Length: 437
Image (cartoon, rainbow, N blue to C red; front, side, top):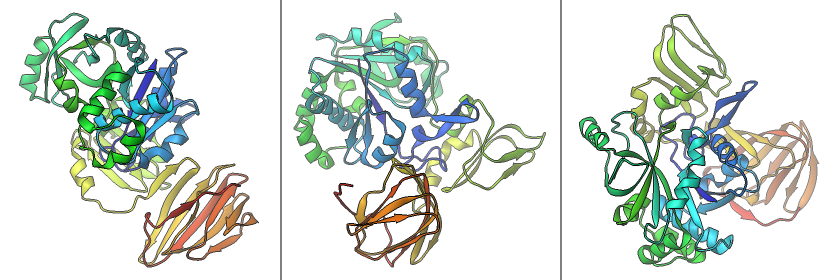
């Protein structure tokens, strides 16, 4: 079975833990053992593997998130990376072409597409085995509809022809008001959970028709010129013959702080103290500073290097426009090689704490508008500056002038204080070079 997981998101609704690079699926928030936590992505991958053997996973993501994604997946999970964000139809078309052109998967192979972050039990993924059985020449698309538990205004609705477990789709409805949603439910409507099954050939034919190309190389080359459009709008709502299967198990969209705290198995993560008057309070603290809450009810408190959120749980769903008004450099990011945290910003300098994992290295790069100083505060490794290797250890200071090619390789886990100095400090000022160690 081929599964494409859609891993995107702009990281706004779970601010301050999420940002443009680290969207909600990467936040480690689900307790697994001994105060260890896993992310939504890790949970989903673990559940898919519980289906059994012969499951191949490809994650469709954006270029911005590719680096952090590599930190969370094993080598057997493939990545289809968008050059820029263009919504789900171009992303799915690119992933389908990647499977066919790069991974040499047959055009007749059936693929299941699913968001990376639903909160479900294992039966959700087991149901994929039934879903693919309903893809045929007559019905080229099969969807999984979620049996509604209440008349939600947050989801689109699938209206089936019948209330049987498997039905032809009659129509689709946009997010309704509560009263209209109740009417949909009374005639057997299902929530649209964004799960589709189809043959690779079907999507590539649609890509050729709507995008003007279908090969992986052409899609990559022309990607930034494509219209940003969802798979629903581009394909699903125009296909006359679609089957839908009814899923009755647990399914939750944990896209807001309110819904996320409903599935958390602990009320406090990180340094936090509360008094006995606090009720229905959740705290997630990724900072090194302690949080104390007294007499607070029905609220969420979240802190990270990006900022602090203190909100009534219901009101937390309306955070997006406030986050859009924040214009600052990303303060924390995970990378395949470790992580970095901004600890000080001045007009002509930026100070960062870098954690570099054992046997990992930064890219071999140079900057045209800034110099750098590395202070090794823990660990051993070596630098390469303009091709010259130098062993480094705790206490060493390395100066990197403007224009010098440089990298650092960790022999053990390393912690580095990096000071960037220049009148124009930005993430675009980076030129990366090939280098064989």
